[in-house]
Image (cartoon, rainbow, N blue to C red):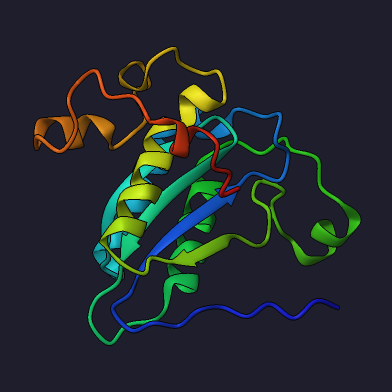
Length: 175
């Protein structure tokens, strides 16, 4: 059995990729209101800063910063996933194992995280997040995709409205 080692950095900033179990289902964008509500409730109970996010139909990428002396991003993800799963109608395929455990078949059990090391690493991952809908062919331009913190970055003057990733970002694959 694989042994997963998580990076525990108190007050750290992390890049995450979280995916649906059935990657062909567009549940995240079809139920964007429920996903937003899940994040809102979890952040009110277990605070963290959402630095950047993009929600695609079947997965999402985000950058979070945890409070000082806090390393527990796993329980936050568990809570977001559980709250979202409870909020949407059932109907997904359930494996025998998930049936025995009384689980929903919405999310992949695990997620991928990366500790953001410095400002350059942060910028590279934020650029990747914001370019992702174009990379996946879901939008022609970054600004066309509505489920992204890109629009917040534009309002704050961090990106021009017509921003597009350079070649270094286009070739990256953090998934």
